[in-house]
Image (spheres, rainbow, N blue to C red):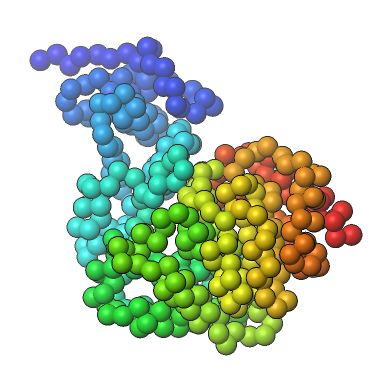
Amino acid sequence: YQIPHYKGDFLILPDMNTDVKLYDHQRAAIARIVLSPNNVLLDHDVGAGKTYAMAAGIHERVRIGLSNKAMFVVPNAVLEPTVQAYRFLYPEDVLDVIYPSQFKPALRSKVIERIKKTENGVTFHGEQALIDDTWLSGKISVDSHPFVEHYKFVKALEDENTVAKQTIPAPAQFFQQFIIPANIETTRKFYPTDEEFINDIANGYKKVIKDLYDAGCRNIQFDDCTWGVLVAEGSVARYGEDADFKDISEKLLKVNNLAIEGKPDDLVINTHVCRGNYHSAYFSSGAYDPVAEKLFGEENVNAYYLEFDDERSGGFEPLKYVSGDKKVVLGLITTKSPVLEDKQTVINRIHEAAKYIPLDRLYLSPQCGFASCEIGNKLTEEEQWAKLALVKEIAEEVWK
């Protein structure tokens, strides 16, 4: 049997990062991976560029329909370099990276079943998110949370003009994840009732909040997609066939407020209501009206960071329900597109919002993060800085 020889000079590789120039031997390896009807064993020297060759080979097989799914299996020691190399080569590809901690013997069978049954993760508008499932494996308990060490790192960079803020998933977000139909059966093994579950979530959050406070943190933000999803048409069905909008709203509010209860007076806890932000794609649409009275009137946060960057968020009238002296940060500058907003249009919208809440309780910010997921949004670093510069310029003019 004579081993066939392959040449890769015919390859176009339309999706590959154009900054990468492959050598002839890499192209030959890619051609062999794509065209060979059998298993392929590549003999290589260290530094020969095997990761790019393998990545391009499996990407092309999926692209042209020769494979439905592709999997890299690599030693733990080279997992991160492999992921980084693949994402540099194909920045638009969706990867589901399974780390050693997720593939422990007790979790292995469930992870394998997930891989077999699921093509992708949560569906955003026009794009599939990475698979990143979570489920309960026991009662909730907190010893030391890695977020505290993350905060200490950022805290060290503070100066007289900056305040280090720690963002964390909202307690409601945690609660929602484990009561959806895909998880409720497992959750009920440990928590027969939502009441018991809510109490344990709140107590866990109180411990982390206290640890952050003790580390010097005075500004915490709850990132909360639950309300942003609840406003969408048909969203209640995500909680099961018998789900009730009023009951869900009350439980989301309760778990958030219980976690906040008893916080130190000098600790600011704000919340960001999000409709999903994944690679410049969104998850849900809907105005704040259905949840405004409960969310804005009864949630015990200091401020709301709200999306108002396009028509999906509705108008400003629901802001009339913001109670007490709570503040509202208007997310009028989108992080999903590199196009800069018109300055005067943004200023006009700020004054429109001021019809429902005093201007001195209003603020301006981008609508969400520039990198709410590990692959980020479709903006360059320079375009992101331009957005922030526009926020600063408008704020200085409106609140001078």
